[in-house]
Amino acid sequence: MKKNLTIVAVALSLALIPLYGHSETGVGALSEFGTSGGNIKVGALEIHPGVIVDEIYSDNLYSTAKVTDVEKKGWYNVVTPGVVFKLPLQDHSITAGYAVEKYSYHTYSNEDYWAHTAQGGISLNFPGGLTLGVDNTFLKTRDFRNTEDSITRVSHIDNNVSTSVGYVFPSEKLSFNLSYGNKYLKFDQVGSKAENRRDDTFSGTLFYKFLPKTSILAGYSVTDVNYFDSTSSTNGNSTNSTAYVGLKWDGSTKFFGELKGGWSSRNYKNSLNANGNTYNDRNSWSSEVSMTYFPQKQTRFIVSFNKSFAESTYAGTGAIAGTSGYDKTKGEVNLEHYFTRKISVNLIGTVSKSDYEALGTGVARKDGKINAHVSAKYRIQKWLQLKGHYEYSNTLSSDSAQDIVVNKFGINLIAAF
Image (tube, rainbow, N blue to C red):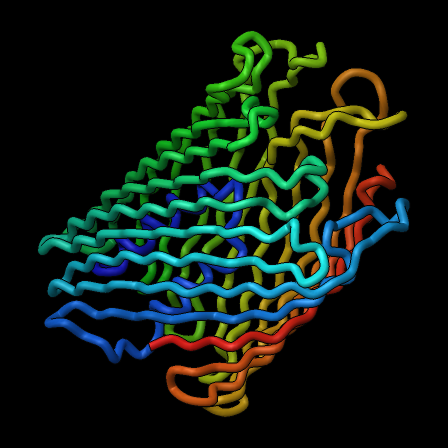
């Protein structure tokens, strides 16, 4: 447990500070490269170069609402070269990685763009149960259009820093983790400056192992949200806190998971937004469940559930009111199976429900979303893989302008050394 606590701590910290933007393949590519064979070494330093070439077809490139009946179809490809460096130092390790993505649209070439992802981390495990961790992810990217974005695809930088310290007491029954995270989001477009923000999150979790493989946990986190480039008297600056308790299982190599539930609050620092609507402070229960089960060596099954409150800039339309946020409930199942050492499939199904808070007059918006992802992978060589994938996404909303259906399929080649 002592050597794994840093990894757990950093993961918990990052979970509290999600990426606002996304680099569609950059983070995933670095993860793929970092788990490759590691055939290139300079002393203790492992060098993992790689490249992913993905050809994708979408029947709704711009995530256009069905009511408009103007969905654009087409092919595009993404080429993602990158490299990961790993330096193991006995019980410590240092990692760094960089990936660049080139998006090329065959018909709508004006949408072509580059994205960049850089990651780095340090994990220190000292004798006596003390662990320290630092992790940073930097993105320079552009968002795909979706129900929460403007018509213009906005580019931005997105930087996330997470630090943690953990300690396991000599009996190994009691342990704790303290973490700090900083989330920085800055848009390039002047018209999006009001959305520039900085989040500072402090959290602490206490674990007590009352059974050989089961621990009870309790924790508290607080986040200060600062929209640093928006009007000070109407911005959405807030303080958000969550107190939670739960259980953590590590039954064996076949089953492990975590269950957390608690009470969350969001307190705004201003009373009115830029539209003159009142900010409503929030108090509600929240939960997070994640269970992983290996029924057999070649099969992995994951179930997760999450209920939380998310911010939104939705301005409203017609009889539907604008909002500053919504309650989101999400469930997901993930099944991965290896038929042989070379052939595997992955099935992911997600269902979510979003209940928007109404500001001012009008009815509240409600959304439901179904997402299905299927992929099959064939390992041609130890360093070379071929992967086919299909994704279906369907958003049903009380605002018909947000009803969006997307079908995407593609094939990619992954070379990682």
